[in-house]
Image 1 (cartoon, rainbow, N blue to C red):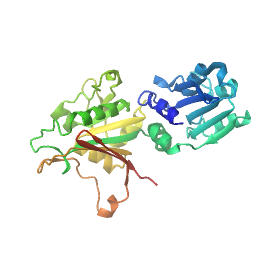
Image 2: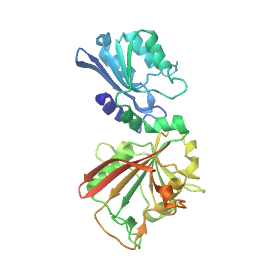
Image 3: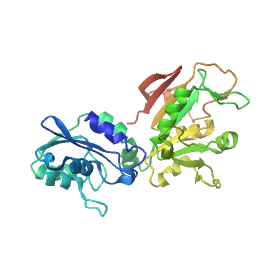
Image 4: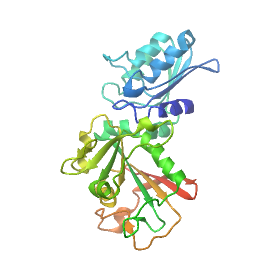
Length: 316
């Protein structure tokens, strides 16, 4: 399942509106097929893996990060049918698919065919890997990651507005890698005016993975950008499972105040700025108790001299 999860990550940011699924076919202790959801959502991971395995899929075990689809589609066969027709003997599935056209139907189709089923291995990791798709199904909007790069005292720039660069090259490269994992990236008018950001991916071999550029504005967006009138309007975005919000302070605060941030990337540089520009504006808290229990630390690591902390929103 770990290998299937890693394969699924190859499609992250490319498969919307479909999830980024991974699949591994194993027979007699050997991997005979690998697959992951391809750009645009097709072929699906299972179809790719079964095609690679060929006759070796008969009697094999398929490890899939998401419940195989069961409904007919003009774009390709249902993955549950593909697995049945290949004659796999067992299917191990990390999590179920809440999409109404699937939601248990894939499991039922496999069970009716007499295929042994195991569900739940590494479910938490699969939930994180497909957070955007799952958030679409459950909340009707993309998953939102908020990225902040700050000094130790929580500033994103000097009082003059100078902000290049707070973090070092390794942390900035990691931030560019994160961009590849999102279909769209959003900033506010202030950031556009002050920094004229390109918001592209500047990593060798990944420059084609630059996300769509969104501007939070009630007006019009410049050429090459798309306007988003308010944080709550992200539910109208098409072909976006994962949205990255990069700033500035008022835009970040607006998404937090609307409780639309699902994941927080905090890059913290070992510097002190003092009376600089704060990383956040007012997020609408009226009592300190309201801030407690909202965020759970998922990961922390050093990126050169900078520290990355990844927090997840705790929701009921």
